[in-house]
Length: 49
Image 1 (cartoon, rainbow, N blue to C red):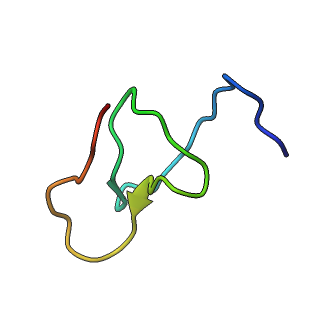
Image 2: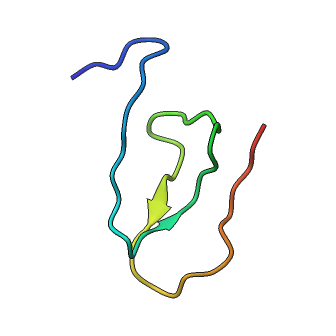
């Protein structure tokens, strides 16, 4: 489907996923990495602007 301007999307991730975004951060489709799966969990790499 198509998400219009200002629409909200809920994303559900497994407990093993490491989030790479912060609450309130604006995500850009096809560019922003939301989470990483597998591997060793480290410090989340986020940029809030």
